[in-house]
Length: 316
Image 1: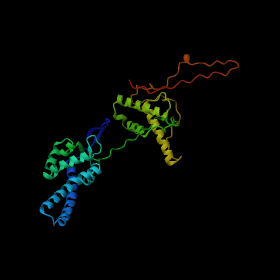
Image 2: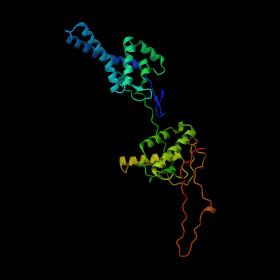
Image 3: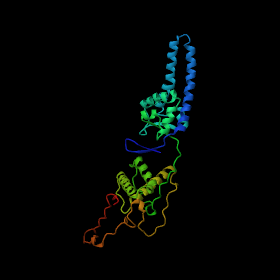
Image 4: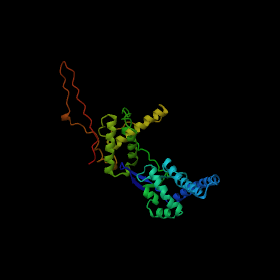
């Protein structure tokens, strides 16, 4: 695995292609190109039989450069690094930052390939690929490119953890239309990997994602709900709505358990939860609770409900 850092400071995990797969791809490409070169040479020989030897030699050199140098460069440029041999072996040429190659990258690789592959029958390319930590030949080094494997064993997709039973159906009235797909993807990736993260880093990430989600929905953050539990419940609500839209009202939905006495949830320590009951709603002391006083001829006063918190507090 090769960790490449893009211009946006995103680490890409790519698998560099090694010598056996690269050699097989080059052999397949050379087989195709040499076959085309022989057919073109036979046609040019028959068509230029009336020319002088110097003209015939010039035509032969031009056809050699066109078929064995120009065509590979054009193929890599137009296919963004996927020649016939690389396509068959599941390889691709990319830039050092993981982006697609351009004409200048293919030109440098093709020019160096004349020396590495054709003039020395691949000896220099094999030695350079064995010495390089990422299996690169000299053409890749000078062009700033890398050959990577596209067909790799797929990793098992981890499901999103289900929400706590006491949160089921609590966010059914939340407006999720303004939440972008990028934020949903970031939340899903966090929820499927939160147990693999450092507790402090994971807790800070959950708070940041929950704040972004609250800002997009326009609803105040729930009181007494940890950020990871809030993310789980909202993702489950969105999945339930998608299932209803796809399968109709008969879609299977999450059935909450029978009502039981409320107990503060115990969140795992990996979520940055300080301890059992720390996020439970606190009762307002009786002394501070306004008591309505009935006045003759007036409507009884209604106490103002407590305002919710304005955001998720980051972990200590």
